Image (cartoon, rainbow, N blue to C red; front, side):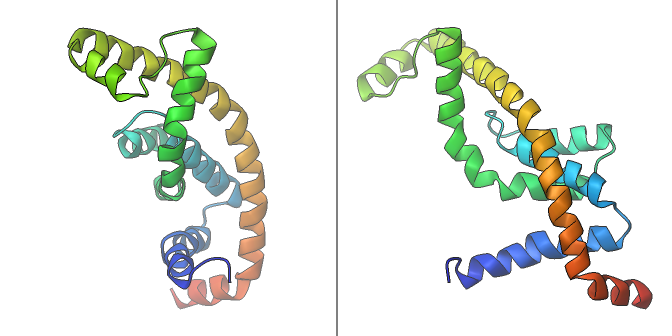
Length: 169
């Protein structure tokens, strides 16, 4: 068994069952796929601390499922942390800016110059967001396409569950 039981159970309770409830509630696989893809793409953005608020506001603005967008964001949360530094480094490379301080001496030097630190952090963040936006524009339609197919298969696989619970409601 490749995936531990606890992770499979978490996935079943926090991802699969809510998605089935949304499908049962009438959300189309297409809308659900775009909502999930949106949440996943926004969930890996290089900003720290505002992802959930950002997803909720934008999902509401674009008429997407807020629950599905949140599920997508939380599923990719580990990737958010893993991709933060690569996004910043790609931004440094593309915009030819100062490199991230990676050793203790460089970090101590920057910490003694708060205005420079603030400027550099803002510049790294802005450039990383540009890189993320380009990747997001490419990744989101692809994700939505494949998620839609997966959701259609999920709906077919759980058709009897969906019907029986709809009839019981």
